[in-house]
Length: 67
Ligand SMILES: [Zn+2]
Figure 1 (cartoon, helix red, strand yellow):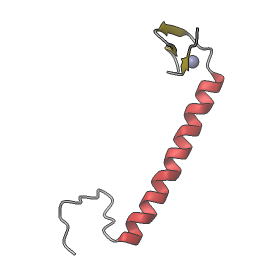
Figure 2 (tube, rainbow, N blue to C red):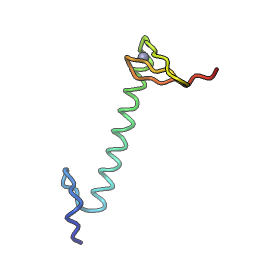
Figure 3 (tube, rainbow, N blue to C red):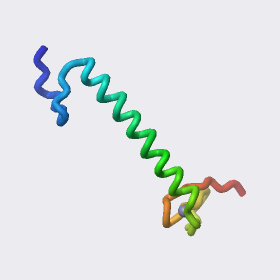
Figure 4 (cartoon, helix red, strand yellow):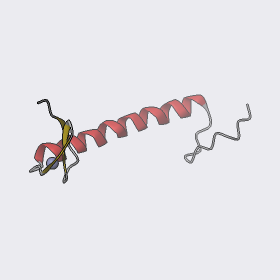
């Protein structure tokens, strides 16, 4: 199978390799989301109000506002 348009920077070119890579990336995403969650949990928020929501200028946490 020749698919030169799939340029994988990590050199994975078989389906099992790619699946393994996907699994690792998903784990990375989970870890990164945990980092964001921790940062936002520990932030002393400074919110900027916008229409319908407010956003923290420090940790980018968005809260939807219902009036
Ligand atoms: Zn914040």
